[in-house]
Image 1 (cartoon, rainbow, N blue to C red):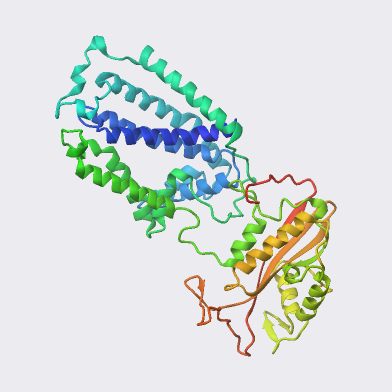
Image 2 (image 1 turned 135 degrees about the horizontal axis):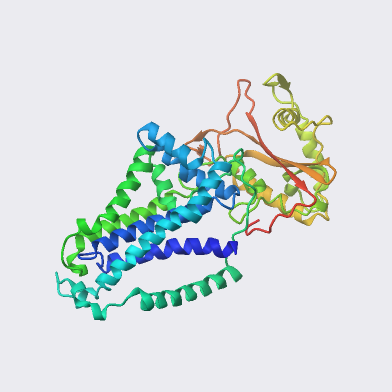
Amino acid sequence: MRDLHRLGAEAMVLIVTLHMLRTFFTGSYKKPRQFTWFTGVILLFLTMFLSFSGYLLPWDQLALWAVTIGASMIEAAPPEVVGTNLNLLLRGGPEIGANGLLRFYLLHVLAVPALLFIFTGVHYYKVVIHGHSLPPKEENIGEDTAKRVPLDKRVYFIPDIMTSEIMWIGVTTLVLVVLVTWFFHAPLENHADPQITPLGTTAPWYFLWIQGALKLGDKVLWGIIFPTVYLGFLALLPYIDTTPSRRWAHRRSIFTIVLLLIAATVVLSYMGLAEFGVINTADVDILHHMTMEPAHNHIGLLRPIPFNQLTPGMYTTRQFKAEPGDEVGMIGAFNAELEQPLGAPVTVGNATVRTPEEFIVNYMETQQHLHLPAGLNFVPLPSDATELNRVMKKFYEEIEAEHHELRNGWGGLIISDDQNGLKRLDIFIFWHEVEMERGFPVLNANGESIPVLDANGNPVMRVSSHRVYIHQDSQYFNAPGA
């Protein structure tokens, strides 16, 4: 039922949008149907808001942060006192919590449906009064075709229109049932947590154009004024385009404007995607791909590993540089390499480190609170842990793919028993910092990245890490791409 409800809500937004486009291209918004179009724009807005208000109700991470992004735009409404109070009124507090959830629930099941019921009635009434418009080529220019529908020939809502609508509702429901049975799923994600912001959060797809516009600059201009002007233009379109003809050849100007508006909407929606205009560092992207919580039908690669394959130990991606059968020798040599002294001691906070091993151990203890009294001692991956081997191989490949930014980079995974039935996984990437410009590594004439050196001429070392906890009863779904 959740799959059907979610798909039906998004299909409703799409169908209303397509209906508005058909009405525009046929010129059916022209006199005497201006007010019919106006009520249609209101219904489009209410449909989008109905879907948006229901987006929060699953109360998972996707719901919370998608709605948070959308609701945050209201705060930008000028003057500041208005925006602040509107934001508090909608959210029920500075942040969305129980009060906000209740308000969105009441909006979704009472207020917005009531408005939809009223304006749908008005819309159908106007359709009955004026009838359906003729195809543009069959209509004399400037003729009021509504006068062609006398009282005794009007198609009334009951029973004609209602019967037709019931039939199409049945067909649409059948299509939706087929889709949710075999193709579409809307799984619940992790419980909403205002303390954790998922990487790459976006608004619902039908509001991506606003999120894309916000990336252009001022929040008031692009988040409030621009959408208001956009919707206002749509609502007043029949009063702006007053040419009597509905034929395409006579509507080139308004066609050009609307087609440009549609193109701008598509481009802005693309800009609203998480990938556009936001450059993450390579280490952040890789660690996110390895550890992300279930979201958007995807999950971090580490999380679905079978619990019985999470053998405590220290493992490294350097293992995959070894020739087949030489993994033990490669890892032994790598452990010895980490113990080699640096050209000069490096001060990190209150500590002085003399080897790469000490640098990593100090980082893990101060940043991740992982005590490593015996230092680092990497071992080969268990041969029978096939899924763990596969994930570590993927970890290795992703680091190698970013070798320009992650110079001399390698990854490590420390698995430890935290409690009975609970494993702690600390995953980290070690690399030498390189010169960056506009989010990309600077390359020399040989196509190699340029290392950053400290005052003593040592390459500047960097470590990035993340930790996750896996319980033996965890039931992570098998997500596409995981």
